[in-house]
Structures are given as C-alpha cells and as structure tokens.
Image 1 (cartoon, rainbow, N blue to C red):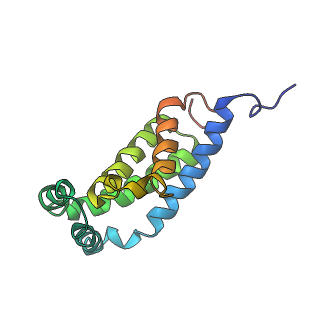
Image 2: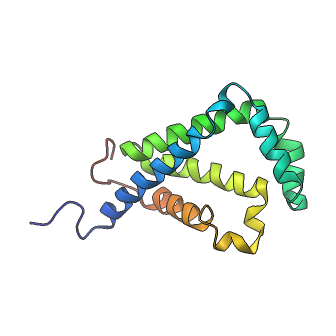
Length: 147
C-alpha cells in the first residue's frame, strides 16, 4: 500500500502549497502596519520609482500611488488570506492565482522583473513558478479542506 503523498504530483503540490502559504503569511506579517498607515506602501513605491524603468514609473504614478490607501490594505489582506488558504488547502488553485497576480504586480511596479538578476532572485522565478504551478495544477490535493 502506498502513501497518499507517494507517486503523485498532487502530494508534491500540496507540500509546495504549505511552503508558499507560509512564505506569504510571513511576508504579510512584515506589512501589518500597512493596515492603519498606507505611508509605508507609499515609501516603498517612492523607493522603487528612482530605479524603475519608465513603464513601472508610469504605473507607480498613475495607478499605485493614487490607490495606495486602498492597495496597502488589499495587499496585507491578500497575502494573509491567500497564504492561509494555501496552508489549509482551501481552493488552492484560486488562492495561488490571486497570490501570483499580487507578486507579479509588485515585481512589475518595482521594475525588478525587467532586470537580468530577476532570473536568479529568490523572490523572482521560484515564487512565480511555484505559484503558477499551484494555480494551474492544484486540483484534488491530499490533506486539503476543499477539493
């Protein structure tokens, strides 16, 4: 008799969802102050602006900065909720898809995705690839509260 996690890509994806969920929750804890004060997000956006490519600067100026009071709270809630869903195994594909969009948004706004170093950045391709794998392939995972 084989284990539920043996011989199945689903077992590997479940383990990946646990680790990615813990990562997202950890990232959210670093942003707890954003819930009451969006100036933390504004400061981060200003820091990115100086070294970001023109397209990212346009995005920061026209979308991110005007929406910072709302986005600060959405990012915190999104990281906590998607991280908790990934850990619990609740609608993993949906939670990973939402998290992937948030991560890509940050990578785009910061301009990091337009740099060669993005390919070796631990927050770049490993996170994007892990979330994409979960968003595309996480159906009927073992030890999940929803299938």
